[in-house]
Amino acid sequence: MYNPTQLQPGQIILVEPGGWLHDPFGQAIACATGSPFSHSAAIIDTSSGPQIIEALWHVTCSPLAKYQYRGWAYSVAGITPEQIRQISAWALSKVGTPYGVNEFWEDIRRYVAHTLPRPHPLKRWTCSGFVAAAMLQAGIVLTQAPYPAPSDLGFSPLLIGPRPWGPTPFPGGVLPSVSSPPSSRE
Image (cartoon, rainbow, N blue to C red; front, side, top):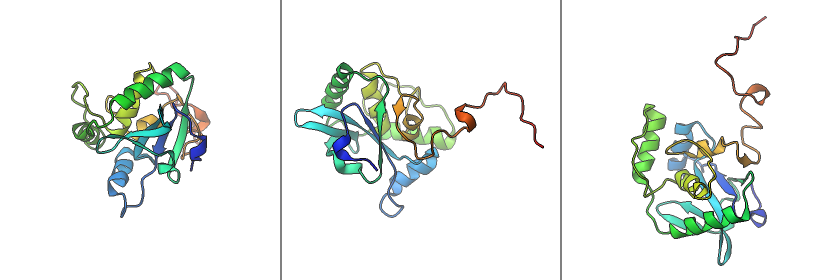
């Protein structure tokens, strides 16, 4: 899906789940959020070159080729070298932080039970919460979702790149408006 040699620090990877047998957790996330994505990660600059950083069972760095067969690479509109340095420094400082299991259950409540999350300060993250928090350290707001899922990042207008669902899920690329008159049917 992406060429690892073309990835650059500051990019984001959104990952499609594996099959139900090999990735039931990822399939459940994609189904619950109505999205083709089940995981997210960021590309950062490290002393040994660009790497993927992600929140799995803990925040960890991974090789760039890890998701090349089911990951979609996105650039962030307007990101600067200074912002990439800020994102990389903050993300690297979180390596080893445990995964945000409580935050994951907040995501499940939001998507399945349609409830608002309980506000509390984040000390741990889900995968997409970690990516959004890293970008926020550099002043980049990818989503307003308090506990973002990969689907929330996928719909961010700041991400540049093709989406699995095509250029836009809305006719003409315009969000429907509640004040629009109903369309006439012939």
